[in-house]
Amino acid sequence: MDIVVKNAFGLVSVNRKVIEKIVEKTVSQCYGVLGLSIFSKNSVTRMFKHSAGKKGIIINRENKGIEIAISVAMCYGVKASAVIKNVKENVKYKVESLIGIDVVDIDVVINKVGTEA
Image 1 (cartoon, one colour):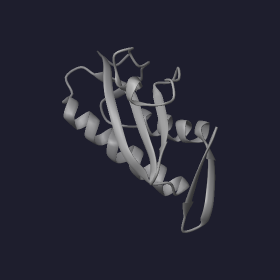
Image 2 (spheres, one colour):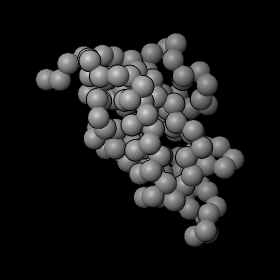
Image 3 (cartoon, one colour):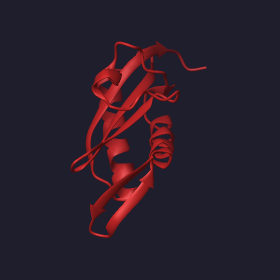
Image 4 (cartoon, helix red, strand yellow):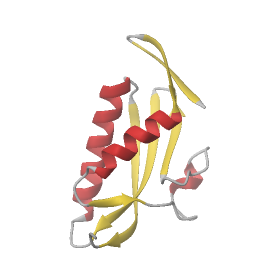
């Protein structure tokens, strides 16, 4: 399903899978993140209209842009608040700069903690 947003360039239509791929690549490069993880049943999936994909990314269209929920596995020994802040800042910057759609909110859920392989 495409997300259509009106901005300075006119109407912009972007497939959710494109946004998911941008988020996935960005998260994989963030400090302290081992990778994406699948949402648990008790996590933020209840707040979103769309069901969670297998990748651990949910994208929801809002009036002024999009909301993104991301489920990650983080490195043991890294401060969780630093990981969350880093993921939010990087994802927001990449999505907005690459496709021109405002990111209204980003929720980051840490579902796993582990060591690097």
